[in-house]
Length: 488
Image (cartoon, helix red, strand yellow):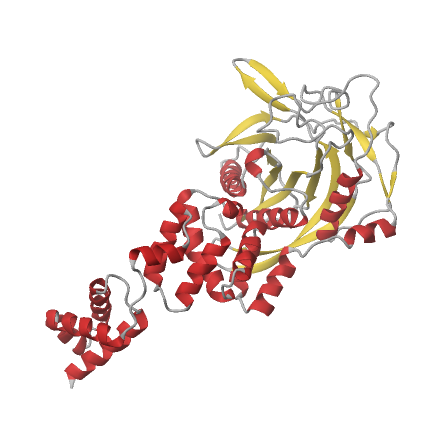
């Protein structure tokens, strides 16, 4: 496998969070939650005699993304008709952009941890980002196809990278950072499970002796970044085996079977799709003045890289902790709410990244859903403060957090109701230490003979006797002093 490397370009389709559709005043609704065909109008239904009108907010949202991705915003951009003969766009074509996109020639810098655990940075070039209208949604039932036009006409931004990605890990890092940028900008909520953000990798492999790219395949409509990772891994392995056996790779469109965790070939392509683009006659060329671009630039919020730098410089967080907290805007917002409620920066970051993320992972809660848990920022801050102030030790605090996760209760109430205040009284701890040493004379002698690893067992016995409420630092100190006295 070391003789081969993946060559990957990503196409990302992001629905924009506008109130109305791309070319009409028809409202945008949640295409999963809303009843089918309740947010339609003559334009999205493609009825004869209708004329499109460009949504200005969609243009400005797309410009925000382009600026955040360091793209050029050309002074002229133009919409085009793209032939599209499927029932989910009833007028028989899609209004998109072709040779005059709104944004082009950008880049995104990513930080990657390779399969071998090596960390490095890489720049992924952005070829273009262009606006178009989304299609409706087809549902196939008992040999028939049902269509819901609620999504038809929703503003869609397509972001296309250059084939600069060379591993599933790089694709995952790119996908996560791009999703974070879209969330920070407020132009897309990042919910891939509902299809408002869709990622499609174009994949080929290259042998070290190759001078040109080989045939590629495309995996359509992946609904999670983890599935982007899995699909690339699986398709890379499949293609290498096909080339090694002499069979070769055919150009194809693939899908990912979530239940079976495997790729499915949907169709082979004999030739490139013939979309027959031509300028959209019902829409004018859009002139984008430099003043307009700068006015949009002035509305850009603090983006992930800037927030990460601020967390490092102003709050003293490590680069890793700051990066993890900033990767999902809801997590960064939660963390800042915890700080606003009085918690100190470093312990708050540590407890979120370790204990809270562990609970979320176990419950199958995605990180960008952190605000939906029963652990409010104010209650989490109170827990961190209890630990930081010495009221709770780490073990007891973890138990309290588990109870908060289940009930949403204030940690102070849990501590008071269950008598969980940490025992820091030296005389009380010293009495327990003496009892433990008296009951474990053989273990003490092993420690005195050089078996330092048994010390942990003695600490555990002391903590058990203190019902988990002992101050670990004081327990360790008094235990060592008592053993040293016995050894003299």
